[in-house]
Length: 160
Image (cartoon, rainbow, N blue to C red; front, side):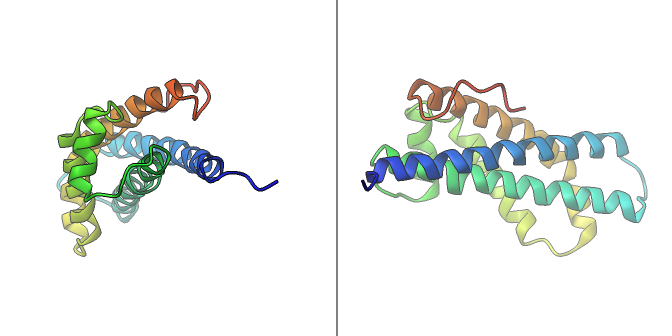
C-alpha cells in the first residue's frame, strides 16, 4: 500500500523536527561557551573559533526551523508558498510562532552572518546572536505547542 502524501510529509517533518532538536541543543551549548569567554580587547584563535561556531550553529538552526520545519508545516496545512515575510506574518496569526517581527530579525541576522567574510565582524555580531538565540528558541518552543495540539509530534520535553 502506498502511503498518502500527507503521511509522507509528516514522516519527513518528524525527521526534520529531530534534526532541529539536535541543532537547538548544540546551539545552546555554543551560547554557554561563548558567554563564558566574555567581552575582551583581544581573543585567542580558539575563542574566535568558538564565535565562528556559534554563528554557524545559529544560522543552521534558524534555517532548519524556517526552511524545513515551518515549510513542512505549511505543506501539511495545504497553504500556498508565499514570500518569507508573508509566511512569518501568517504563521504568527495562526499561532505557529510567537513573533513574526522576531523571526524576520533572526532571518536578517542570519543573512548578515552568511555574507560576512571578515572574522572581526563575526566577533562583533556575537552579542546579537546570543540575544536572538533566546528569541529563536522561544519561537521554536511556541511552535512545539502548535505541533503537539495537532499531534504531529509527541508531547516533547522543552527544547531549550
